[in-house]
Image 1 (cartoon, rainbow, N blue to C red):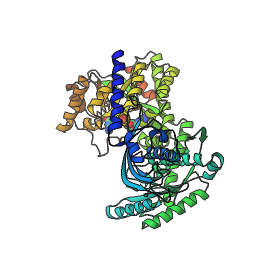
Image 2 (image 1 turned 135 degrees about the vertical axis):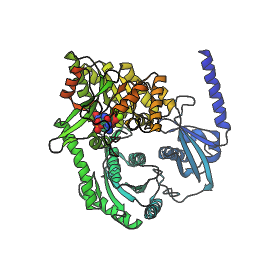
Image 3 (image 1 turned 60 degrees about the vertical axis):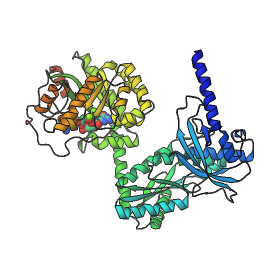
Length: 580
Ligand code: C2E
Ligand code: MG
Ligand code: MG
């Protein structure tokens, strides 16, 4: 214990000395991106003592404090450029690079900003829109934005594709200013800017044009991408804002124009997006409108499918099919994968590939996912209660579902309510979902494992997981993607990958399952190389619960008699990936 304290003390002294002797100006910030430590070099660059800034002891110190907050908030992408107010009232252009750090050590910082002066001291006439950036939010201003629009248009003319321009305005922003004051209004705009930046890719430009007006320009391959972004923007801005002690709910109106579809040049594109925004406002606000009628119809079709999913949930039009997992040696069923189906009264059975991506984007997946999980657990428990030999049911989990803040609690509650013992449930998660936030994923998986639930990596081999992470994830099963299985008997390279995955699972003491086994040759290969559990059309298609129950009672499944030895596969026969 004493030794640890001693080390911590030594570490603190070293870090303090380091911070105060390096020539670079440094600002440390807490988890809320508020500055909590400035070093000596910062004092040299700005002339402020750190107390003047952190305690807002002087007017200029207070301005510098505000600017630091803006810089730290604005620099999501890592960088902020703008003017810093100095102790003598002059302004100095600086470049601040912000990096997130592990906030648990000493000093307790979550963000480190390196402040580099890029100019001398100046006295500015106006604090507005310095260096092409809006001082309040740190976003590019109108001049830079217009320039970026023109660039995007030129690039598209040369390289193809489209440009989407979203012109966006907060609805009734003046009400916030009037009710809560201008400081709160400013805070809201900063937050809006941050959320908009989070919705966009690095190559897009988000700008604040003036007042409550923002704009986004992006190059897109498919015009549908603009629908996705517009819906995302409406949904993130619709989430409540916490401004001081108040919870503020605002809405956005968005006008969208496309190049080359709606306008041949940058300035005309801007004009059409303005028109579309006007149209969105007069049509009732809190919505997006395209300049073109066609696109409005397309977007409406998308919204239709969304409302149809909602209705389908309410009308119980979803059902779960089961596909057996079979022990290759003796054809005994050892488990089943639950696969959702939508039985639409008009269109018949709809594949999850069609509706899961939409449900994922609009958030309905959480409700749908919980429904599938409940149904699968209920049915599995009912089979056990009828005296059928217990088997494990595997349920697919989508990205948004897994990342949801209450995912673990939801699973726990479903198991409790249905009475299924956790060991008879397995969750299938794809690699890409786990790689998005590794630490959070490990924490959730650890909690699920602690309950006794099995965890499988689905479509293994198609994602980007690094093998070192594989050891850190508390998983129980690897599921070889069907793309590898499809060719094991004809393509030696694919066979080698499948063999390697089987070997890897053995080495890491994991169960291995092969999906997409369609012919006897696949099964023979897998058996030979030690993969015992197989799933695929060779044995059975996914079946409705009653049919699967019949199969389960028989315990053993023979391969589908009607199936030819090697079916002719079309290029797209392996189902698409819909979960990441
Ligand atoms: P997946 O989890 O990889 O599921 C396996 C898919 O492969 C299923 O497609 C299954 O019908 C198909 N399949 C099974 N055996 C064979 C075979 O021998 N050959 C070929 N070519 N395909 C085979 P399905 O049911 O259309 O589901 C597609 C994807 O949709 C699933 O891929 C999964 O990612 C997703 N999905 C299905 N149900 C759910 C669900 O309840 N929640 C979530 N989040 N995703 C789901
Ligand atoms: Mg799966
Ligand atoms: Mg799969």
